[in-house]
Image (cartoon, rainbow, N blue to C red; front, side):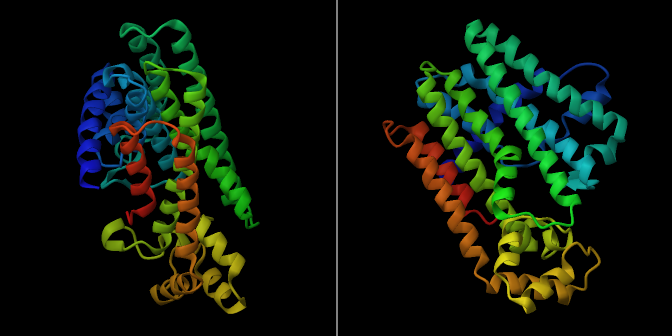
Amino acid sequence: MDNLRNDLNDVVSRVRKFTSSVLEGQPIRLYDAASTYLTSGGKKLRPFMVIKSCEMFSGREEKALPAAAAVELIHNFSLIHDDIMDNDDMRHGVSTVHKKYGLPIALIAGDILFSKAFQVLSLHSKNIGHDDTIIAEMNRILSTACVRVCEGQGLDIQMASSNKIPTVDEYLNMIQKKTASLFEVSCALGVLSSAQPLAVNVNNLSKFGRFTGIAFQLIDDLIGVTGDPKLTGKAVGNDIREGKKTYPILLALENADTNKREKIMKVFGFKGANRDYVEDAVYAISSLNIEEEVRRTAHDNMIKAFESIKTYAETSAKNALVSSAKFIVERSL
């Protein structure tokens, strides 16, 4: 994993430098707001996957930088809008954009990030030699991914505002759109930036990204319920208190007996819940072996991801993608 971290840090540093160079303009306050999350933590796995998917098919990093930057800009756009919808105060240890700069600037900052993503993908890809057919396809699949992310967010809001507890399948459909779509398009854009932008390669790497993205969200959900507060920076059982209908909570409610279900529901959606009650709810979920089930489902998706690229030769780029998927499934933060 140390090799992965070093490689990830190196790639992310160069992507960040490129992204910062294109995210400049007037008024400065707007661009400062839009740049807030670029340097404030986060795993930056999506742009890393763009670069490694490109290198896997004999592409050079510089050919994939516009696509990696575009994905990172779209992701940051979605984070700003997520924080507005959730009215969150902090992200990655810094004030959220709307709290620091105010709601009007935050909204425009999100808009500029979204717009810049397509500007970068079009103009810079042209400047480094990608032909118009490839650039048109890049824009097509990125815009489609953005639509799916918005649809997923809409489903998430619908689930959150409803008194109905969604089924596990409904939830998995939502995260495939909201979260996995950006992982999927990251890998696809990487292939299209490469020397071998064949449809079969795009399709296979898209599957790799999709299943890896699902695994990523499942583990994120697990950390939100059972994660160590010293690592996550969040209170114990945070997602239960917030009333988030995430995969481990849905599994627990499906499998709990009456007593355990009551303990969970006593805390679910009650932000001011007594700490003892919260710990009882977390223990009730843990006693149902939910962590093992969530990690097993995440692992199953990781195996599907591996299956989609198993026919390709072993290269350092392929190994980096495999290692990133393993990191996603095994992490505790």
